[in-house]
Each structure stands twice: as structure tokens, then as C-alpha cells.
Length: 489
Ligand code: GLU
Image (cartoon, rainbow, N blue to C red; front, side, top):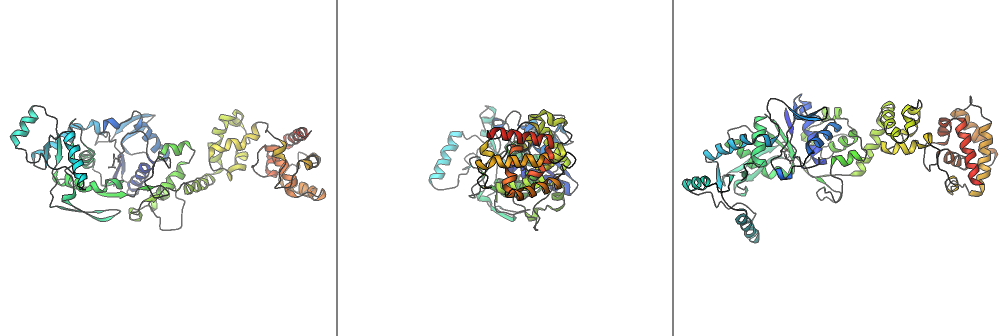
């Protein structure tokens, strides 16, 4: 299968776009086919500088590099493949040629209607509660008059002539059989007055010439499909298959909007989501695996994904689910990889972390507790900088550690720990001795361990007291406990 992703370079890559790209990628991989990237920049006013690079970088981050078309190599955008160019603004002559052919064959017509006339026409239709549609004012203009006006350079567009008595029926890969009555289909503009095609003509020409087998795109294009099928027919070409993926919805079932949620894939990258988590999440937006399994890698998705398990109804963009998947994927990272990714980030804050021979063990201590890598450096800070401690932190009402009790607890801790040698500084031993001492001093476990952990880390939440004590080692532990004693005075 040859599939494609065909974004418009209007700024950022929408998460819905990334999901479409994912589905198209999966189908191409499954069939050992090719996944193309085409840039649809026929609306030049909406094109934004740097948007193509941004799209490519995001696709690369997600693991969805295209096999053909517009690609990135060493940070530079290039085009690769025999069916190019793959940027629509570089294909204008092709669209003009096919628009001319449609005109010549009587399947399209020239329209000179001014924007003002069209606005008035639409307003009238709306006032009469009719669906806004071109009223065919120019369809019967005599050929001579058309030629004359064209020769005088009068602004014009080319419209597709839709047969009103036609019933358009096709089988959508997701929605099954879909039918439209010809008289409800507008005579779509296919070539604009500036010589640029509209999306409708451009993508039909491109999907044909680029030999696309399956078009996967957003539901918003469903009602335009009859025009596209008509274009294929009028140009004498076999149409590809179409699959319209469901809309993404906010929790209140309105269309996913910037006002309620981040909609740019980039926002999620910046927030620290792993590509594995976002891809897994997007796959489940509309696709149902048919089993209880919830975690899928890209490779697993390639195995099991199928369009017949994609629903028609809109899919709710549930951030709680995304965060859950993020946590799962972080924990699933092998510790070496987790530590590698985290070390780079931590070293930016604490240069010493870059060459820390114990980094992996330290990272392992927080592996179960991190949801976002970017929170890691804060959680590891106590290894690289003196923690900031206060009486308020050391005391804890929930653990029944009152300020008055702190001097006794700290003294007990120091005495017990001082009696343990470097050699015996291992988890089992520390545990045994500290718990025995708590009993002896009539303190609960929490009363003894809370201040210990807090004094060592300066944090209200951290890995357990024993783990931290071992990881910091004897000298640092004792020094920090002494510091804690000092702030009590
Ligand atoms: N450029 C169109 C869009 O961004 C592409 C739709 C399609 O995939 O055909 O919505």
C-alpha cells in the first residue's frame, strides 16, 4: 500500500494530524508499502515559514519518518522519490493542465462571479434557510462571451460541473457505504483566480500521479468526497480507497479546541511526554484493539492495527489516560535507557551528574516515582547539592513528629548510625538497627524515619529512608543529620 500524510504548513502539527499520520504509517508498514509526505501549500496566505521543518521534526520524534516525498536529512528539508515534486506549489502547471482538460471536456466551467456577488448570493440563501451553494450563474454563458472576457483578462475561477441527478455512493474503509445526492453537492471551485488549485483538485491529481492506494484523512473531508470521486471519474482515473477518521473531542464532546486543551503535538513534546506514550495514546483515539491490552509500541501497533476497528464516533481526548500511559511507558523504559535520557537532563542543572559513576543506581531509585523526565533533576537534586531543610519540613504532624520531639529523634539517629561502620552500611543492616532502635526509644517507624529522610533529601517526597541513606553513604548521611541538629538550635 502506498499511503500519504498531506499536511498544510500552517504552523504546527495538530495532534489529530499526527494521529492521521500514524494510521497512514501503520498501514504502509503492515503491507511493506511506502508512507509518503506531501506538503499541501496551495493556500499561500496560510503558509508559515518553518512549518515544514516543524512537521518533519515532530514526525521524526514520533518515529514516523516518511519513506518518500518531503523528508529531512541532517536537519535539511529535501525531496526524495520518482513522483515528485511533492510540494503542491511546485506543481501548479500540472493542476492547470488538468483543469484545462476538464474545461475542454465540458466537465468544468469558467465562472466570473465577483466575491461581492457570491457573498450576496450566500446571504440570500441563508435568509431563505437554504444551504449555501453556487447558483450556477455562469454555467450557461455563451462560449464566445467566455472567450472574450478571458481575453480581456477578467478575473475568473474554474468550477467543477456536478451532475444534479447523480447519486454518489462509495464504501468508506471506516464508515462503510456512504451516499450523497448530486443536487446537494456544490459546483466546487477547482482553480482559483490566482491560478492556484483548491485542495479538491490538487489532492486528486497528486493522489493519482503519486499512485496512492488509500487516503486516510479527517472526518471534515467526508462531505467533499463526492466531488473528489467525480474528479477521478471525469479525469478517467481509478480513485484510491478512502478512510475518514473520527474527530477528536474535548471531554464535553465539543470539537477538540485550543481553548480547552493543547492541540499542537509540539506542546506535548515540550511538556515531556515520551513519543511512546503519545503514539500509544493517539492510536487508542478511535481505534479499539478488541482486547484488554492498553499498552502498544509502534512495532506492536504495526502488527495489530486495522481500520475496521476504527470507530465512526468522535474520540474523546482524555488527558488522564495520556498521563497514565506516560507513567507506564516511563517505567517500562529499561533502566539503562531511563538513566541515559535522565542523565543528560540532570547534567544541565548539575554538571557533576554528567560523570557520576553512580548515576544509574540513583536514577533507579526514582524510576518508579517519575512521570515526566523533566521532574527527575529535582528529585535527584539532593545527590548534587546540599538540601534546604527547615524545622517545618523535619516535623510532620501526620507522622506524629512534633518540633519538641525532633532533638531526641535526631540524636537517636546520629548515635545509631554512627555505630554502623562503612562496611555494614547496607540496606538490611540499616533497617534492622534503625527499627530496633525505634522500638527501644518508644518511637514509631514513621517518627524515626520521616526526619531522617527529610534531613537527607530536603524533600517532602522522595525514595524511602533506607534507600536514600545507603545511596548517600555514611559520611554525607552523618553530616546532613548534624546540619539538621544545628538548625534546631
Ligand atoms: N491538507 C489537508 C489537510 O491538512 C489534507 C487532507 C488529506 O489528507 O487529504 O487537512
